[in-house]
Length: 223
Length: 266
Image 1 (cartoon, one colour):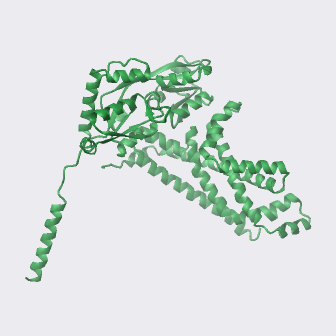
Image 2 (spheres, helix red, strand yellow; image 1 turned 180 degrees about the horizontal axis):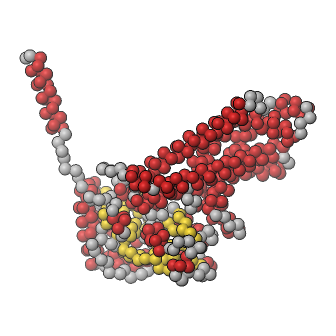
Image 3 (spheres, one colour; image 1 turned 90 degrees about the vertical axis):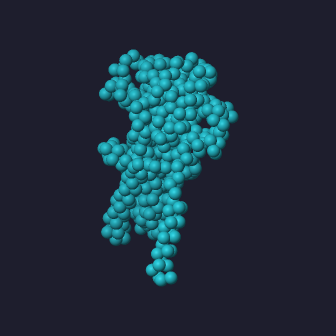
């Protein structure tokens, strides 16, 4: 089997690949921020909320964690319009990614929160901190410090899972690679370069997250 | 024997045996391999009605699948289907996972740079279709509309060229997603083969879908890897015979409901 590699075809389309990579980063970053907010809200509601809300959140987590991401995306993109909600491809992608991350993030945060000794919470309440203040300073941030590696990994997985949104026509890196490979027939070269770009983005995100950890948890010793 | 002579003898013996071992052999052609193993691997796309579909029992069927089965029968080889999505039809062939692809690959000069076409075995047309309410009479009407197309198809190669600046082209990975997008309102219009459109409108009469614009017509044919001249010649011979005896026309009519137009040859 002879195969002549022609990477020059890939470099000729670097602008399209860069645009696709940029959209991946945009979608993933937005989904990370919103997803973390959803996860924090859910974990608080699950710990301190009324019973029906706790059940609803537990149901949501089990549903999302036990179904494929691609199916979730198809439901958001193809089925919501039938209910009258019109969503564009990028909006549907972010929505599905936020919902997906929210479920996994809630479980990760819950593990961190359960590791905080009950005595800390009692001491905080005894000192006069409100429920919300206790949650934020005594429970959430120490928990975040503990589960930061798991959370960072989940963020990276979210960015990699964003490649699936090419199926609903969001023009991110995988979609661009697929289109280019189908018109130039250089599948190996294009997929190889796309893998390299994803690797670079993942390492970049890891570096940024490491920097955030250092700024928030190490430099400001203690809190 | 002196050390030098002994070493020289050993070296010569080693060199001679190496030379015998690395005899340049004539590589077996794909056709020879198919004939000797009595197996032919054919790449098909079963998500592309009516050329490739899955019948009620989940088995591959469709006009090109029927052509492939007949071709394998006449070749005396057992057929092994390699099911690929539309984006995988050419890569499966080029990577060696299939010996031939029979999946309504329309003849284009771009594809001809990467693969070798056999003579055409059918014809199709690409049209843009949409719901009755959507007004599209000329290409200029596409401005501002979202048009869904499937990657690695003839519509991907032709629609972006004929759609004016301002048309929003939306790409999907397979025909099913493109159809879903049209039915759910995510795109205003979609481009696909007229046969696929008929299948979609027939299954969704309430949507009142109709053909709006003809984009292009094309012939399609089987493709083989560059260099597989013997296989290509055999397939062309087979196509010649089955064109003359009406088999190709019968298969085409059975699955598309349309008479086969006279097929040109290269």
